[in-house]
Amino acid sequence: MKITLVQNAPRLNRTNLGFVLEQTRTCKSDVIVFCELALNGYLLQDKLLEDAFVVDELQPLCEASKEIDIVVGGALKIENEFFNCALYFSKGELLNIHKKVHLPNYGMFEEARYFDSGTEFEAFTAPYGQTALLVCEDLWHPDTVKELFYKRPKIVYVLVASPARGFKDDSLTIQDQWYALIKSLALHCDTKVVFVNRVGFEDGLGFWGGSCVVDNNANILHRLPLFDEKIETVEVEI
Image (cartoon, rainbow, N blue to C red; front, side, top):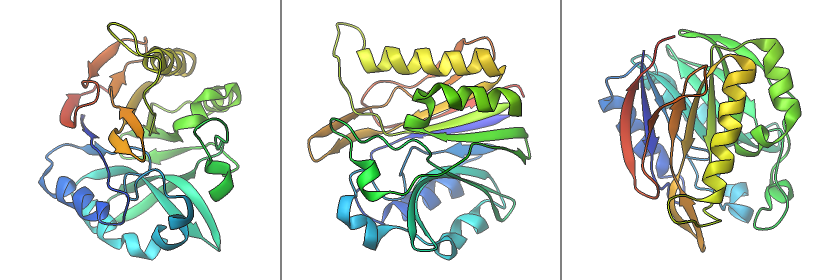
């Protein structure tokens, strides 16, 4: 199974949909994966009311998924509520919507002020086995791993927009913390983990990248660089 990781710097507007479609149309992998809020940019705040998508507007992604499975983050308006979502498109359909459950609302984060919370974690049947989606802060809560333990996904996609902090000589504190979390998820749930984080800057926030794929034994199979935009493909056994 070939998985392409897209570590990019989304713009803070709806034009990102064009970039996502361009990448999917030229990609020769089985699955292509983008970061949290890749369709919108991260610091939407009041722009959320204008820039959130409704599902019908994502039909071009359904069409593109006839050739390749697509995992992408976006802000969705569903029945007058706004959610930070991870979306899985496959074979011409929107196969699954995961609504971010745990919304950070501390320090530099204000998501709970603008978004509504999802209520559940689930595994669903995708072409490459039982699959689960998580969005960023979801993985920082122990109940998430507990729920996924019982659902037994073969692969978990974690879409992230993590700002850089805790600079050290050869890494970042936040990088070390994230890798500890995704390795723990892989071990506890006996699953492979695909972690895609964005890069670039928005309103003074810098994002660090470091996207990677981890196997069931918590080994990092492939890792993208810090801070740089990069698109790379990884061969993964499922």
